[in-house]
Length: 466
Image (cartoon, rainbow, N blue to C red):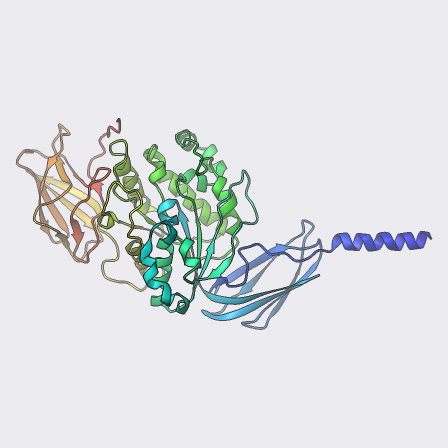
């Protein structure tokens, strides 16, 4: 009898130690894995459970065992772009992931201008409905969720890109991915993890905000709302942390409007967030972002100061910025409807900087330096090799001031990649500002057609009072 009870206990113990293999949602059928890379596969199983993983692209089987925390992880080597393939997971149970492609994977994140989709009124996507299934694009939309602590799984599953699944997916992300798919001729995986209205602190690990006095003070200006989280780290913990094991080529980002009440800390906050993402992915991936569009905010200059901070972030290695002031038809709408050209400009950045397929003038001209000579100011720009041009007879949104700091409309002469600025009312100039306002839209462009980024040559204090 004792021997029988002992056998029963052993059987129960064995059952308690075994469990089915489980995978995080980011690993699933229809996914795209980053090509020619070491890629992690991971999940859960019974403690010490043996797991075999077989990849169909090379027929190799890799074995591992779950640890005492019932987790496991292994690495596979991916080939050049192609597919479809399968991955077989074997333990106490079997899981087969099917219709897997190998290609380029990009994260698309930010607030509502990245989130906005066909369902939000971006109807231009309907023009592509008939050709979507011909494109090798796969979509993963991470469902909105929050957490006080970093999570190991998120909600959302990989799907093919068709006229149904695209309707709720980021329009900017889609147009970005479509351009990459067509120009690189490889499958593209897009992960959309965004939430309208969210400030950048929400997407930054909480300790990096709470342990920085400036960030912590700025975060107090993020007032609670019924529609989106404002607590530092909450979206990062639930919507980014569960994905950091998944190998990506890079990230695109459209956010900043919700940090307008504390623009002075935004540049350093974004630097901190980008560094944290790269560290936790263990990869120094490219990060391309959109400068916020002209909009009539409730207080003067707050939008201009966020744009200025975003321009400063170009000093971060492997970043790039898209300027979209010319794509705005209504400065009373914080969501410009032209998402196609936003996505295309981001894609041109990625094609040039990440994939070395350079299109002439793929960057907007950015202020570099200025020099005062007599009654004129000469302004030089980076990324204006082809020269500058003015659209229309009269210059727009460019002003000049003397030591009195009173800005007056300026005249502009273009000389190659320089502008020479003056005003009869300013005899001894000290500073020039271009499109340095919330809703102003200028008319200076590179000769390749991209708008000059807003700038100011001074660092004078700006009054943002009502």
